[in-house]
Length: 435
Image 1 (spheres, rainbow, N blue to C red):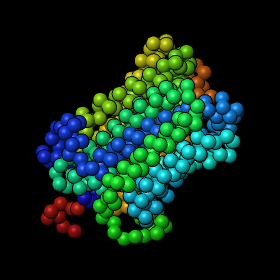
Image 2 (image 1 turned 180 degrees about the vertical axis):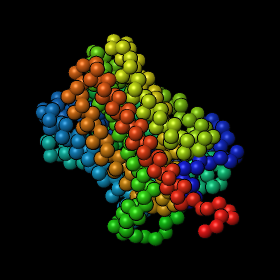
Image 3 (image 1 turned 45 degrees about the vertical axis):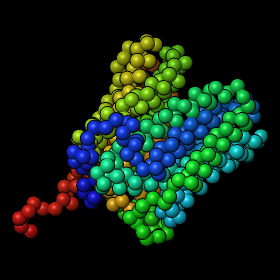
Image 4 (image 1 turned 120 degrees about the vertical axis):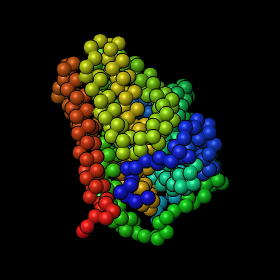
């Protein structure tokens, strides 16, 4: 598939037909099923520990709030900042080897956190936990894309469905992890971290037994600098990476704007329920959204996805300022945000893989996640500053939401327009046209 067709979704009747979740999963080869299981396990293990790490650092180790914030920020920096390096290493050393390395580092990281009794060992543990994701995620994303390409070429199912199932698997882990973590709050934190380490060790054994090196079209072994050069020179990919960063930044604002909005009306006790609703929306809606993508194609899925996502940010700004209405407003926002993401993510990942010409997939996915991490930090800092400056009143909070909506819609519209112009520019002339 050429880069110029990256926005065109699969349209064959055989590939685009409706199917249920069970039938879809049964059509997947064992390595993809293992990837989905590992994503569920990774998210369970992560959300089993990390959301409750701050409680442990404050209550058990007596660290100050500023120090705790710095520690958690270091984990995010290690994870997002190293994504491209992890992807480039996967191209150099192999997807299977890097996935196993990421699992081993995650086991080590949680093992360190289980026995950490000082700030230095805590920092070591969180850096290892973050680095593990940077090693594991690009490798399995690249493998998923490669296997998905095979399935689509064979007429089994669209690759976008594989990416959609990957997103669903992540949400299952996001629901189960915090619930299990909350249940384990009554036991010592060391036990919780040890359970997470054991879970990842089991995933590692499964990968060691049943995960082969995926098929790849890029057979040349190049240096990390060479991989960086390939990625950086792909202008169309960089535009897609920008779209990915915009949607990732929009989703990351949930962690700031949701608690801020509910706390303003004394409804912060409902934050956890809002996350559950968001996860259930994805679990129930992803398969229908995949069927829509198959019908309308990737280009329209991207356009509608960003429109829905950006429009969702308008909802909390127009509801009456009462506890019930504010809660309903943020629920409406979360539903639209996740609906847009369900359209965007499978289509966008499929387009990225096609734009990369199915080569160096891990490096491309790693690079776009690193860029997304940078924009997440900037977006959160900007939104936090806006809340501090004007968010003390209902009018000020409404302005924060509206500005976020304009930034998301405007940034995505400009990038999509640039992609359309590029596609028209590189399209072959009509048959019979003179030079």
